[in-house]
Image 1: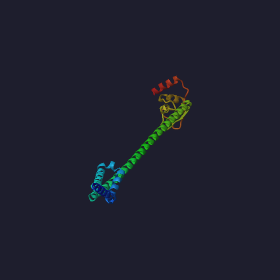
Image 2: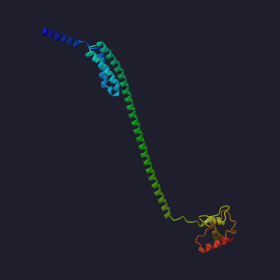
Image 3: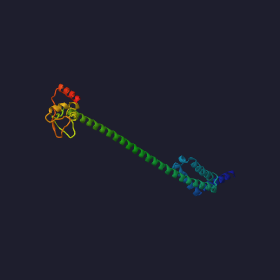
Image 4: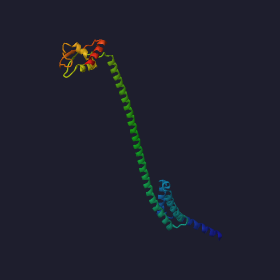
Length: 233
């Protein structure tokens, strides 16, 4: 009798097991399981760890009711809740990823703009250096040309001093004597007066157009005498 009971119990357990295995899978469970798996693969545990943990715990609570306690209706409530939480979290993950991608693109653009600006500044600085170098070269070349010109002028003999002079209106003998190309000394006018006595009746009165001889080879004594005579007048 005991053996028969044992055999019946085994049969009942086998039937129950087969019934459990052949029971239809809850549609809410399938959808919830899919969203939980998708969230796990899309960085939800990293981006929203607390929210993902809440979805996972809700799903696992449903799993416990469904498999351990065999309460399908109560389990579906948790599966549906896990699905709703999961869909909300999925939208947040997508939003955050889009935001992070946009921020990354913005940082890349800012870095590119900064690099371009730095490149332009370097190019401008290099151009400024080249310009200054060229200006320095031109300045040195101009200085060298000026030095050559001065040296050339120094080697050239001075222009000959005029041996005659044409009187202009209103001029006097001291004014003529003071001219740079004549004597550059107003007190030497007696030299001109003595050399042109035939044209000058009064040293204080000259006529425009008169052409005077300008003595050049006079002695020191003659110059001293001319200055003495000029001071007397």
